[in-house]
Image (cartoon, rainbow, N blue to C red; front, side):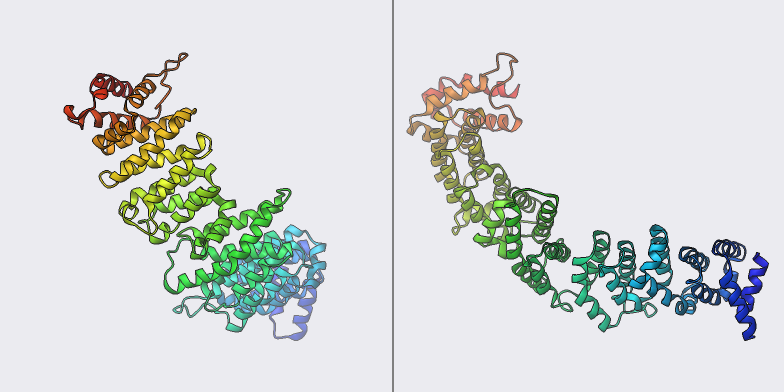
Length: 565
């Protein structure tokens, strides 16, 4: 059949003569599939949108011919026609949807599996995608969800159904009130979708699950919590299940829900919603996490579950830790497994946040308890948020009485430096004392003596250079804080001469092989020592200098020069 003949046949299909229409229809059905596609493509290329008046009848005939010619070729012919009409607006599709909908529903049903098996799976997937793209009928929403969730349906078809379902929901779930042309899903269909989406998300294969996850997120952002009160209970039910597939579905869905609040500084009703969600799910989440960490082997599945738990935790705590996690039993439970990541998050919040809020200050006693109990090997990670809190809100640090942060610092340093811990583990304790002396000049005179006492008590039994340097720098920071007060403390303790002698020896010590300094090698170390030495020389009247220091002032200056050069 050539182009002219096909045009005659198509015109006959529109004839008022029933016999002529019947003959044309019979002839169209008998056309060889490849010939039909080639001829139709040629027709479209030649006439383009001029064939629009014939489109509905042509589509009806192609659908009628579907069972009599190869499925893929028929779909290809249908899509060729749809492509040619894609710029003509929605009214044309309304004219052809009655013909296409039965075909689409057939292909999305379990009965359509024979068609899928007889044709190229990839080609069928591509063709279905194009059909849905052109059609986009919102009334397909419930059956599309059923197909995406139906385990007996081929995975490729489930994925196509999920993709189309996602597009329809995005467009029709909650269009703007001013948009009077876009179809709006009825409330009963929305309810049906919400009642089934979590189960569908849980059961879907990965490719379809990703698409359904986007749908789930769209609905959560629009309807949760006010118009989806049952979601929270559904999440808890899945998380508490002993079925791995349900636990994974619960984790996957919870991650999408808490992500809604990740970048929000929630207040009022929204804050209450977030708190209720965390209170309901995080105890179960912690139990899951502890079980995962106790697994004998970190299999790919276990690692995937751990990743989802951590993502949930991150999203829920991104702006600030929820109140539940500030309770000691919950904080301790999460810290055991997430110390390093949680402290990094806390460091971020205390540094980049607009200020140190009361909620952030409430984490100090929790950190204090952990360092005093079991977390001494993570001192470095604790020091960063403690540093940020002291330097960014010094007033609260100095004047709070319950808790007393100055007392806390001394307890932490005393516990660490007096305890039986390795030199490397307790370096941050000495750095914390330096920090307080440098930040709080003129405000903590009564703590200078105790700080120096802790440093000098630990120094004789210290072997590692990093701790030796840090302990000496506690005294250097004290000199910077108040040189006269520091000298008096050293004189009263009988350690003035031995300390200065040892300090200068450390400053001048070099490695035999390279000639490089043994101590105070970083710029920060040099800075602390230089400030202490200069405060001693320039901040104390000559008549007030103890004899041991006055007689060796040239050695002190020599040490400062050595550090500078």
